[in-house]
Length: 291
Image 1: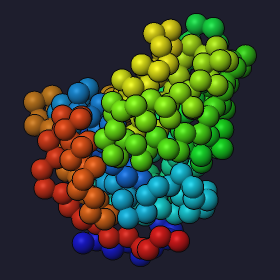
Image 2: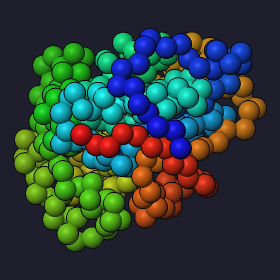
Image 3: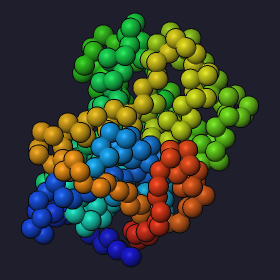
Image 4: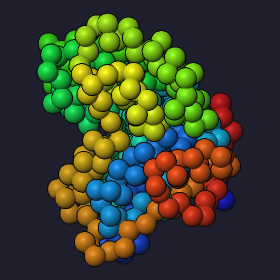
């Protein structure tokens, strides 16, 4: 195991550069507070099959959604440090809460590209809306940060954004209750107020939520476009790789390695099946105890 001890890390170059290999040879480093970020991994693999991906799920300290900004920043710095140790050429923050609260800090500390999921999701919502009324669902911390509202208004100042914290959805997803009457009841409880506001676009502001896409679409109805932050994040990553000459050679055989900070095989296998990922052996990485 790798144990992270430092709370603050210096401005570090990409480890792949130090090893003498071309930067494009390193993997895309992806992390989330748990397993939900595998939806981003699945989108990356579909779009960029030649890329190697190293994913870390901070399952020992999930969820991030109820924690303070300072704690989320610290956790994110620690996990990003583990990805640097794997010679990551780019870090993808596949967690809406960490994207909302920790991406600026990561960009300060690390001298390699850092991509979150908020800005791509906001841009996609603005492109999708027809009436300028956009709904956002996510964790309490993501919604409280108002990150999506700010990102949407930066692109569309007159947009009306209706945000709703939906904390019960993640446990339902982790139980694989994708097609269940209880799940539909919970979704109606959360979505009906947004639908009453006339939203025509709904941002799935948590990387777990694409696993529940069919149920959300069923409740929201055909008139509402669902914006998947995972797919739009993958498109943004591709733009970075191309613009910075970091893309893997087209004929390279891509692959996925998964590491967790605590064993959680149950939902991992649910995600593996639902997302059609080949995960294989799962590594374990140790971090400091949760604060």
